[in-house]
Image (cartoon, rainbow, N blue to C red; front, top):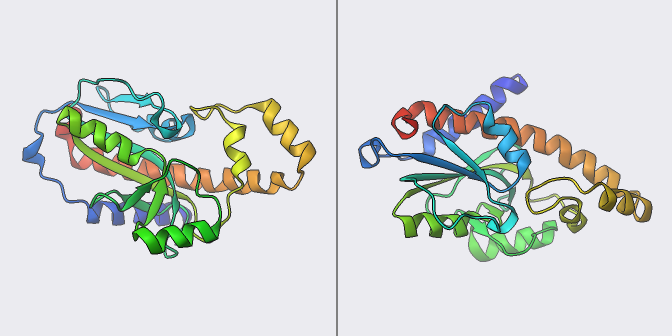
Length: 219
């Protein structure tokens, strides 16, 4: 199987799990949130006219007070808790709790395993519950779409959060300082870059399939 067909299969598997009643939000206005710039960049090119895209920051620190939307998609990357998930696999937060929202980075394989045992969640991020609650306050339908960017067996150096600001913009000085003090972190950066590229393509495919299958949301 080629890389492209593999990504299409991952996205198609996501769509097959999605249960959506198109009569519930016919004619609704759609708004898409991402936490960081890399997530927004991954999907911007496939969005039709009329779909609003907003970067809300890590931990949703830039979440607006209100949006004019009847449907909200949170699209982005997540860490796997379920060992069966691979890089680029798509996870939807349905039922709620499938994606666990953490206030801090869940960095090590041991931490991920403990959280998986405790919660049964398949993946972890830092925004889903926040945005779901926001959508509920607005009376809007919520859809969470996440692409796996680190597996349950991978450790993620907590330093990586210091390399970007709250919207994912790189901090060159922080990166340079870390490389001087801890040269081995360069391997982590290369791995994360490769994983994010795969996850980004898979995320775009999944969001694209969802929008094409529910065109009334973006009308």
